Length: 106
Image (cartoon, rainbow, N blue to C red):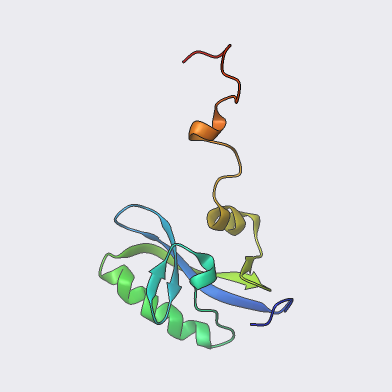
């Protein structure tokens, strides 16, 4: 897929059953936590990818496998999938604490 390409493609995503982490299917390497590693398909090619991914659903490696649309350089087209790919849209954990916590007690 060329940089700047505005065509719509699909990749397969799921959640890893062991820990719930969002993963993306790569035909050659299996599941990856990184969208950029996903095998990209268009047209009827996606059916073959889904069939391969479904084998891992049946063997309880992943759960909830489905396809998402991407464009350009692995950019999800929906807000939901952008959040799944990039992480939470708010600060959390240590990042949620004030930088100057002299007036802040837990």
